[in-house]
Structures are given as C-alpha cells and as structure tokens.
Image 1: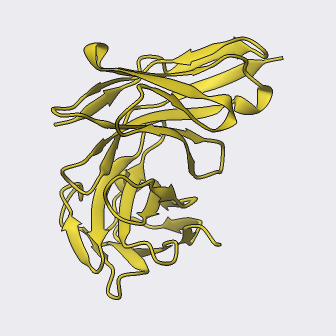
Image 2: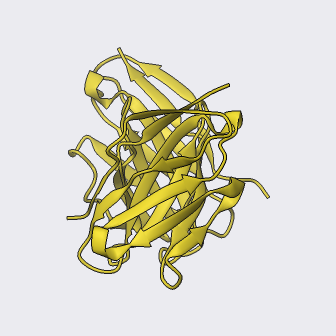
Amino acid sequence: AQSVTQPDIHITVSEGASLELRCNYSYGATPYLFWYVQSPGQGLQLLLKYFSGDTLVQGIKGFEAEFKRSQSSFNLRKPSVHWSDAAEYFCAVGDNNAGNMLTFGGGTRLMVKP
Amino acid sequence: GAGVSQTPSNKVTEKGKYVELRCDPISGHTALYWYRQSLGQGPEFLIYFQGTGAADDSGLPNDRFFAVRPEGSVSTLKIQRTERGDSAVYLCASSGTSYNNEQFFGPGTRLTVL
C-alpha cells in the first residue's frame, strides 16, 4: 500500500528566509506526486504536481519541488517566504492504478515570523 | 466558472442521527472523490466515482457510510447512526478524468457529532 510521510509537523521560518518541506513516499511504481496548501477555512489548493519528465517541478506562488527516486522524496522549496505563505502543507501520492485516488501525508504547519 | 461546492458548510448532530452531506462538482467533471480529514491529520480517501458508479469504495470505514451519485454530477455522502468518532471535515473533489488530472477540492463540510 502506498504511504506518505511528512517528518516535520511544525516549521517556523522568518519572512524572507528560504523554505524546504520534506516529503517521503512509498509506492510500488512511478508515482504521481502532489503538493497542496490549506489555509484556515479554505479548501485544498494544488501548488504543483509531478507525473513524469523533468524531476524539478515549478508550481504556483514561487514554489518548486524535486522528485528524487533514489531517496523516495518529493521535497517542496521556496527561496524567499512571504507572511502569506503561513498555512498547512500536504504532500500526496496518487494511485494511477486506482483512479488516481490520493494518499496524503499528515501535513506540515508553516508559521512565518515577521 | 464555479468551483466545487459543498453543503452544508457546518453540520452539528447528535449521536445516533442520520446525516447527508452534498457535493456539487465542477460542471463536466466525470470523476468525484470523497475524503475525510480529522483534526490535525491529512485527508483520507473514502470513495471515488467515475460517472454514476462507485469505482472504488475501499476507504469507507464501515457500512454506516454510503455515497451515491445518481446522475453523474451531484453526490451525497450518507452516514447512518452517527458516532462521535465521525466528527471530521468531509472533503469532496472532482476532476476531468480520473487519470493524470488535478483534483479540485471543495471547502468541506465540518461535521460535529455530539
């Protein structure tokens, strides 16, 4: 069965600092990988996705993620964090043999210090 | 166009009661998913529809949970004999097809069972 681990439950960074959120997955074949962001009272919004091809994926709001098959990782990065980035971030893997239903990690709550 | 909508946004019920949660997907989207998000956790898959049929209901926790999508558009998640452990945010998502497509999430229904 597929699974996703986000080792960091909470992360605090200063505004303007760089950010990396970790994600490790377990999946038998080539995975479909996603990062979603959830702000308080808001629905999940897709930041970026990886299906195939270039392992460095660019997303919205200045985010990027790199797929590393050897490490089973799909870490999310941003070079300079803005206060509005404070939210909960979820990594997910899609089961391409089962209608692409998503398995989510437990999430990382990002706080941004002024 | 309109996104995925869910009603009600909040539902408070008493233990043992029956509840229905509604999802209106994006027009034309053939795939529809239900997830459940408990406090402090990532969403967990419940059931997936392709058109009118439930293609995968392996995530439904027990037979108190049932979902329908009779005309291939609106879906209703039904919970019988609610228990306090059913309290969670129930998320609905839709996509154009089930493969290689982004899932668009609704804002969720917060269910509280007293």
